[in-house]
Length: 196
Image (tube, rainbow, N blue to C red; front, side, top):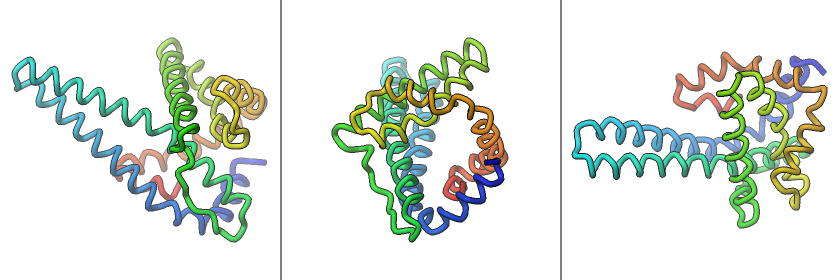
C-alpha cells in the first residue's frame, strides 16, 4: 500500500468514530496545555521569588511534567484500542474508553511510554537517526499490548521491531506526510489534532 492509499482508507473508515473521541481529545489537550502553561509560569516566577519558594515551585513544575509523562502512555493505549475497535467496526459504533487507565494496564502503558521517551531522547541526543529508528521500531507497542494483554514492555518492543522490519520507510513517509498538519495543530494549541 502507498501512503495515499493508507490515508484514504483511514479517512473513509474513521469519519464517524473520530467525532466520538473528540471530548476525550479536548480534555487531554486542555490538561496538557494547562500543565505546560502552569509550568512555564512557575519557571518564570522562580526568577523573582526567594530561593526557597522558587525551589518549591521548580519541584512542583517537575512533578507536573512527570504527571503528563505518566498519563501519556495510558492515553496512547486507550487511543490505540479505540482506533483498533473502530477499524474492525464498520458501523462506527466504537467509543473511546479509557482501558489504558485500568489497574494492570496503567503500569504497563506508563512504563512503555516512559521507556520509549527516555530511549528515544537519549538516542536522539547521541545521534539523530538512531532515535528516529528506535521510535519507528517501537511504534506498534501499544497495539501489540492491546492484542496480547499479558505482554510486557520489552516483549512489546521486540515484537514491534519484528513487525516494523521492512516497513519503517513506509511508516516514516506516512508520519512525514502529516508534518505540515502537525505544525498547524501546534499553532492552534492542539485543537487540530482531532482531525489528524
